[in-house]
Image 1: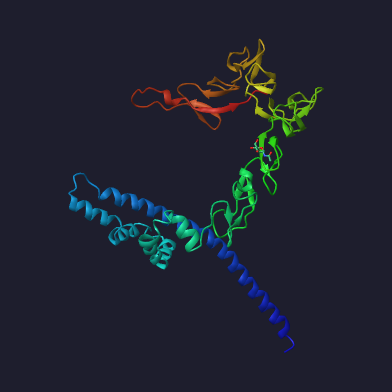
Image 2: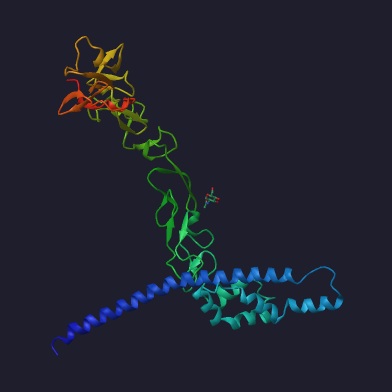
Length: 359
Ligand SMILES: *[C@@H]1O[C@H](CO)[C@@H](O)[C@H](O)[C@H]1NC(C)=O
């Protein structure tokens, strides 16, 4: 008995949660019910047009004319139209159609002339899953900003045109506030009164602004700073005393930012792209008229490949010592290759022994 209090409480809150989730579910359902209904009435219109064309060929006799004009308003035509209203896979559509089929008969035979707008008559007034444009919710109340121009034309009203939603605005890009009359940061009011607002984008240098140019900024964006005329200008990050890039990169300034690019392989440190922008040349390269070029280690007066029967092969930034033709590498030495029985071309007999890096 003692513990029944908390249990009851838990049960109650659980129940109310259940009810709440049903309410939320129902609200969502109203929105989708309205779009299902719209799908049905749109398809009805298409079916109406289709059956009209289908039955009016040329050269009808008077008898046919009479028959056709009867077909025009006949049950047969209605059934033909009804058959094309829902995709067989659309559960919601078929459910709604089944539930309200008699309304279509009523409308077809009795209401069509007085209420030609089927969507309005069926979805809004009869089965009440939709509301007129600019209104929302169970009672079709006006959206925030009024039903004529919901959200003052700068946003979307939640539940607009359905029996669901809360009528609040989600504003278009550039607008904010309950009524979508205020401008977001990065936008300024070009025109504004109590019911109308036009927001336009600031210059790319402004975080906030009062006009369109870089002189109209209230505050500069990151990467921009105010000059003496109070205009926002690009910060040249690359001109700073300490480069924002690493040793083997050069700095490239851009509007509002910068980037770091890797130096050419000929360089050890550089001020830009290319072997002529090196601070110093990388190992294996030398400065030739301001451009870093490969050193040909093999043509230096003092031979770099000192083992017997070796020859030197220059590479970019380095060189290799390889065995001469007719010799192959064995245990770090170049030894004579065994002579084949028949003479062969011996291009393949050149084999690498050691890769060297100049110090
Ligand atoms: C507000 O401005 C718009 C657009 O300029 C104009 O059509 C409207 O009449 C104005 N409303 C008021 C209350 O001044």
